[in-house]
Image (cartoon, rainbow, N blue to C red; front, side):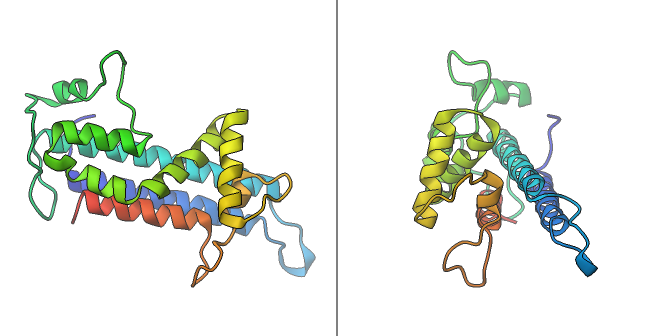
Length: 215
């Protein structure tokens, strides 16, 4: 990662999220019947697969956002609005900063679990700011997003079981043969105006990113 500005990192993340929204919206539109009884361009199953791809790409963009913003803050950069966080470490360059955040005994740092990122932030920044307060405030949403990501990315019984538990918590029941993409396209109960679960998670992750890099 060539050194970049925090403003650019936020803009790139927002752009990636927009592309994921567009992909999911296209998949939905392509699955609708056309005029004069024309068959949809794609099946409901393919729509769900494309929706899952959109979510997976968005989560990967979120992980990249966390990594890039963390490194740039560790190098002393300030956000577009506000001050740089107080650091406990002062790496001489980007390569050193990237190496320093890697946990002992691992080859690379992971950015998937919000709690682990919060703990990492508290080792390098005063009160873990700006990461720890934002990630802990959104802990439940981010953990849900991680479970959905795992259900898409891993063909395992454990990942599927956790996803099904999440669905029951939200919907009170588990529809038969319920795909992850089908859940993401479902309207959130009692939401006003109506919003899909996909947009619910996208909007909350986007808001969290804007709090981490205020502009």
